[in-house]
Length: 198
Image (cartoon, rainbow, N blue to C red):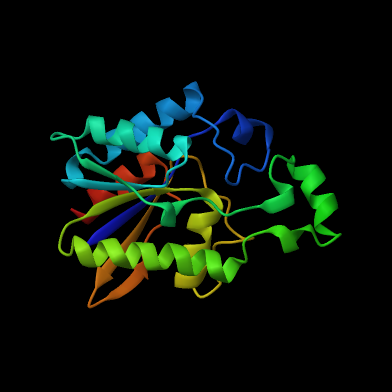
């Protein structure tokens, strides 16, 4: 089975480089358009189930995808897909965050190993539950990157990969094992990859 791990569409905070973390920021108009493009790219995947982080930017993205499928996919909200808790850095711009990084503010953040375990446990849970069916999971940049880090054995992901808004990463689940396929694909890149595989 395939698991399509999708980052939410753009928000105003993404646009100005603010750390969002658990702040509940909605999609902006660009983000809604990105989610619609993502939905179009996924139309031929026969998705019946979408699992989303509870944060509104992820839920909005998931709803747009669900409403665009031929038979509206069921939507499940799961806290396991929520973004990393950035602690005291939440709301900071990138430049200010870099300054504070040098003073140990990362100690207030959710540790990366706990973040990746939370996400991977959640993915395994639904991969077992919907075994044999492709599913969509909508989450966040830091959260998805933590999964990519583990599955790529540190070659990509956290600190190395800047995920695009509404990007699609493809995981496979076989014999209880998760593997990383293509990742950080724009909807157009995803459609090209699917066309080449067919």
